Length: 318
Ligand code: CP
Image (cartoon, rainbow, N blue to C red; front, side, top):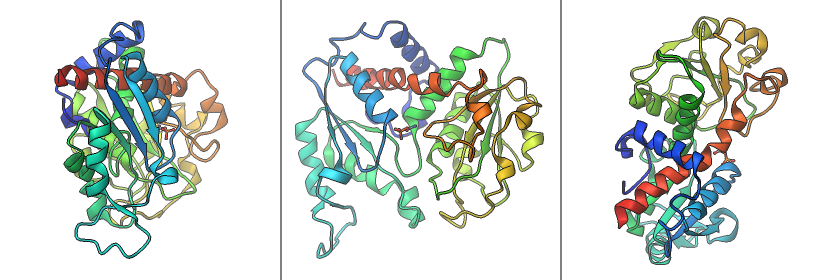
């Protein structure tokens, strides 16, 4: 594996899941694999889970880690080709990324979408420029349209909690929010669950919140949440803004917030969310604090997902 940007970069999702579970059982079993190697973790946006879990994962493999908050501490970066840099942007990614490629062996990068320029966002302008100019393996710590370490974590959590000899029914449900949020987590979850192929997969959202078909194709789309949730084994809760009329909030119906009442028709579904979560806006307290919620287990699995991915990259580099 050279890059880890989307599900297509995982040679085999199930073996990556099994590798992660082996690291969970024995975190330090490869603690010399990354010896003498350094990973730079660049954040253009805030993060708690991704930042800490990726550092822990890299350190479990013996790597040195350096975190750089580009958004706060670095020069403002320009990404447009042939830009006349007479404005607030101080350094072009063409100049910065090759230097990072000399300082580090692997680069992890978190960017966010503009939510204004759909073409640039869906072409992954920012992360692709780092890939192009750094010359070293790049791991997405969430990009404009995808969050692959989160999705791998989600599948690990489903794999370790589902004990029946049939495919789980997994429902991704849109939920209200107070801010305009990216489609990354929802796109990515859909892409990974479809690529994994081990689930009966349903997506439910109000009309106008259709996601890009290139990620959802293969899932059943149902606009009635109650109907979609019937017999669900897993309910993945996430808000996203509109894809077609890009970056807008249309309906923000509080009736879509996940409550115990809404969960009643499920198969005692486990409830998932990538976090951070707005309590009593996206999910009610009663759901988050109930035994159905696996959000803490899910977030803790971020370490093992990152460790499995970094291990693949280090092994391929040798
Ligand atoms: N789920 C997730 O990516 O969390 P952070 O934004 O805290 O990293």
